[in-house]
Image 1 (cartoon, helix red, strand yellow):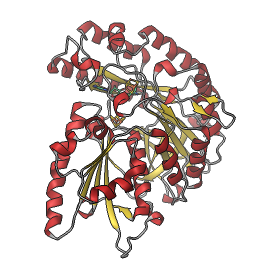
Image 2 (spheres, protein in one colour):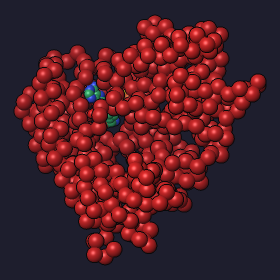
Image 3 (cartoon, helix red, strand yellow):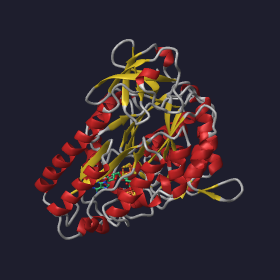
Image 4 (tube, protein in one colour):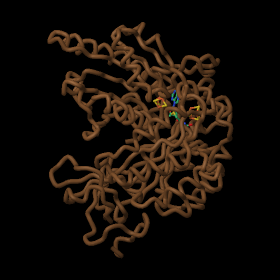
Length: 491
Ligand code: SAH
Ligand code: SF4
Ligand code: F3S
């Protein structure tokens, strides 16, 4: 697969039940909440935290919307299609609500996430079934907001109070939890001060805020205790992390990773999404030094044209990006790179686009995500001269995706015959099959007993599929040295 289906096309199923947290209503009946998650991993993390906040209020998670007393859409505003999707989904929810009403059951509807933040009360104006609009910085207030909404008032909460969010959500996360999936997200930083001219994130998520080192270490330890072995640190600008340590000093992401590498039970670390400007020496050295820091880096560049990079306010040139990649590869030779690209930013000529294609050829990505530029209200790009026609954007996207697909397939094919560690995460489609993840974030399918879920095993890759690798367990060997690749003969 060359590019992930655009983020907005994925409604990420969010399993949010923490059964032992479920409190009953006074009459013993449980209420049910259905959360649908769109957009980036931070929304996935936030959806889980919303469920944590609602559990003590008597809400149990359900995967069945018809069954839900409360439906929450955790939305994404990054491209137009993403934002519009919310309204079509609300249309469907209206029908479900009407059906439930026939049997005397009510359904409350909440819109959370980045569309909530960006559009506020406009949402309930356009979709009157919405009872509650809540921005990403206010989830800790959900119980009170729901009480308000139950009184029949349309509630809109889009204040930025991110410290309160983190304080409160960590408290919730600190409660004992049931066994969790082997791989988990952990938000360390939220918001963005970069103001790329195409992007809504600085407006929907607000200014950059980093959580304290202690909060993050606590949460990672909790995760380890509940069976998590791989933690992906999240931030809209994760490598701009600058959190306060116990002694009052400020730590960058490299230092934080070194500390997290010491947490017992956490064997794999990843982070996303990073900005090229914030890849400092210490972080690059962490890739050299830490066996548990996985050799895969998502480092979006968006364009290979200096003119477009400038117009996007990315604040670096293509040469600076090349030099950065050289330094990273020197420190961590086996590392695979991934990126994001936007085609058809205002003013992008054929030559600018070819500069992007040239950059991709030179860097050679293990995978990449690519998008047609979408004009977002309130961003400088939306009103720039030289908007590119839709058909030109489509043609450029197809050309770019063909190239990236070629590179991705070549990268996958280069794993054939290698033996490396795979974190076994869940059952596969066929009986007896498990699915895991390679150090380079590739899905790996193999036959293995179910009790190995949650373990890291040495696996030899025997076949390359279009989206995943196929492997076989190397019997008697749990894990190679760090992610170290063994030649097949040594296994
Ligand atoms: N913080 C990350 C990006 C977050 S948004 C970074 O700086 O790279 C995820 C991706 O969505 C971006 O990398 C960009 O490729 C894409 N994107 C953001 N705004 C967009 C827009 N208006 N149109 C098309 N793609 C966009
Ligand atoms: Fe958006 Fe740019 Fe911030 Fe990334 S760095 S979130 S693209 S403004
Ligand atoms: Fe979308 Fe908001 Fe994430 S706009 S990509 S959900 S930060």
